[in-house]
Length: 237
Length: 304
Ligand SMILES: Nc1ncnc2c1ncn2[C@@H]1O[C@H](COP(=O)(O)OP(=O)(O)OP(=O)(O)O)[C@@H](O)[C@H]1O
Ligand SMILES: [Mg+2]
Image 1 (cartoon, protein in one colour):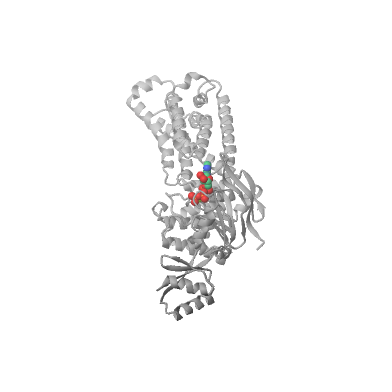
Image 2: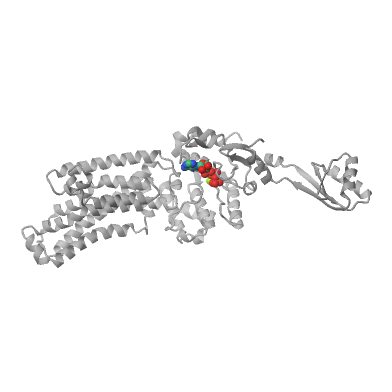
């Protein structure tokens, strides 16, 4: 039943600019570094002479958390907005489909869309490295990691944003909170390992990568379940 | 008609201790068109939301097709089509795509989309994005969406709201066909009695959350007593002549009003007046309109 709702959701997001957002974000991140490395090629290649790929990925990684948080915020809001816009909830939820299926489909499509973005980021990074003439043995696992790990660690924020966006018709609340958290994540570094906003970076750097992956997955799941329980019970206007 | 499609038992919904719907006992028989009437804010939409499981009753129970809505929601909803308040649609999609989104969830054959588009006569416009539709077309798309799953029960909340007279007429004809051609039971809400009296067999009137009248439309029409109004050349004298033959009329603005006269009484009175050389200009029957009765029921909080 969830798959049927999901397939309907894919139809509903046509022409909503979501796919564009999904493509633009990783392309933007890569383009930024193309500019960075293009302008300061000699300086940077000397700086990272020992590990050119590592240097590139490190530079990209700086911007991955903020991009993920923004992405999760905007995608959640756009996904929810499709139903809020003309109060389609009353039509959708009066169909013979469980609310759990409806909610799970929304969650799944949001995760899938962002996952596409992350895969594109990995591919884009590789393309950029090759274009910059870096060694041809690609660091496959590092490339995959930069796309996948921070994403998993941002699932708690995604679940929270999706829940808020689905609950409140007015998207101002959820979007401003999401953007505040995205920019806030630049400054939360010294709050330590317990602040979930720091987790995306910690899954790539630092000693306990596995712990933060697990924490991200677990907290994300927990928030999603709370959101689901609430969605199942709430009155539909 | 003891087979009920919808039955509610003391259905109540409170918002902050104020009852929007109060101990409502609705009963709708199979194959009928039920007009659910009430002024703005009476609780029609709130009731309909509860019938669809969109909101939880504070207390009371909803039974549809003889099953408890709380327990059997999905099975019941498989056989229900609905349109609540104003049509929901995805403006950036065409009518076909809108229906396709629902079709995927209902898991129906694709051909069904063309069928419902044909029923509501939207086939020609079906590939345009719905944003540019007129209100009437959106409303028809809403009905098409409701019909998609071949429901046995159609719940339409003010489907003619905001439509022009021809749009209203079109929707009304569409609704009237439902029981006849498709065997569908219809619940249609409205705040105008005149709108449902032409299609509904039964009516329920709700005011301030309470059901104040529920019966057949004939029964309601029965409440409409008539008066005979006469305009004659010498009204004062005519009142005396009428009184002679045992009929009491009131004189108002030069016209005489009689309550509940039979045909023979009217004929006899006219004959006597003519014999007495009165000129009779007009004999009119004034029916209290259903709308008057409606206003009266709603206004008094329902003493009928
Ligand atoms: N979510 C809510 N919170 C608080 N009060 C509500 C809510 N929904 C409805 N009400 C109140 O319940 C009452 C009934 O509203 P409802 O929308 O059911 O009326 P209605 O008969 O459909 O009216 P209309 O003809 O205007 O559509 C109104 O007084 C309304 O203010
Ligand atoms: Mg209403």
